[in-house]
Length: 479
Ligand code: 4AD
Ligand code: MG
Image 1 (cartoon, rainbow, N blue to C red):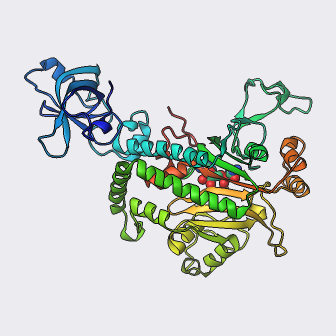
Image 2: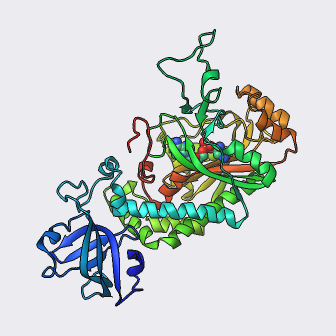
């Protein structure tokens, strides 16, 4: 039988012979091995009797070696652990040269660990992050499955630009050194693998909408790709997105669903891995101490998450948000780098002001100017001339900024078609999207949650590169 250290530490298998496997974190006094198998940050203390073990074997018990230890689990004599394994035999499964091992038993910077992402799973920080990431994945599915949503796999290779923003990675099998050209001298994609130009998807939304027009409640949870050249702590070129789409929902229903989902998954992760939350709470507190007092967050990680669970998200319109910004001391003292006026695409400094300074909690901003949002968003019926808006919503989270973007969709064929033409979205090629508006259209709404931004929020990690195992960012595709 194979035992996990997390289970053993709960004291469930006392006084029977068992075998544990894992990686050595430290080996003290030729006697105490701190063994970790990734099930928890707490190591199992394995006690060896050096008189009974070969000298040569003892030498091979090094930091990062993989071993199997057999013995009896007993109540611990020493301080710091409840149980320990008194080993009768040790097998070295995989040797490791501790001198050459890049992870020394000391503090390493997050930047350094990014360069050795293949090994950083073996640190407490990344172990906690990845266990929470796993819990959040499962929590998302649980939330939707409990409400009978259907999980739809939307395509990863796509010929359309779902966001109309043109930030796509091309997928091709054409020979880049010898591109086929047509008579006009343009690349002839007829000769490409799909007989047309294709890309990695930026969002599964459009296909999810098709499914919602049959199943009512669906969601996708898949990888998405953006070739935006943003070198920030919030952007990845490859990230995972959760996109529910619900027939008969309006913008308010959409916001209710998003708020309920966020609260559910946060609670789920906190309950599943309280030790990891505690560990990351302490890590963040330590990190905050390095900052000047006026830049420190008011709440620690755990307090912040609990606060979010206990309070309703603020809901305001874009127009109200701009009004708040214009009235703010920050604006009056010219603290904002970017201009503030009705019609701007709010910059992260504006979003952070609203969330962190003004409301001090997550904020749902709705009804954005039509001109800064995607073609599929529903055009609001009653607008001031020159101030046309769409039924969009962004959810802004403290320390993160935009965590969710969504909208009620334009279900009226003429309005949608007209908007697509205005925005140069090919209506002919996207006949299939328009068909849902031709054949039994209905009000519907959905949103996209950036999964890594959620993981950042729950773990308190400042850089998105640290919440996905192998980040893809401009000029970086290692591992
Ligand atoms: O706001 P976005 O672009 O919305 C959509 O893609 C819609 N089709 C979603 C929908 O309505 N079904 O992206 C949604 C979310 C953002 O709020 C953000 O959290 C995340 O995806 N996101 C990114 N996360 C990491 N790196 C990037 N480059 C991201 N771009 C967007
Ligand atoms: Mg957005």
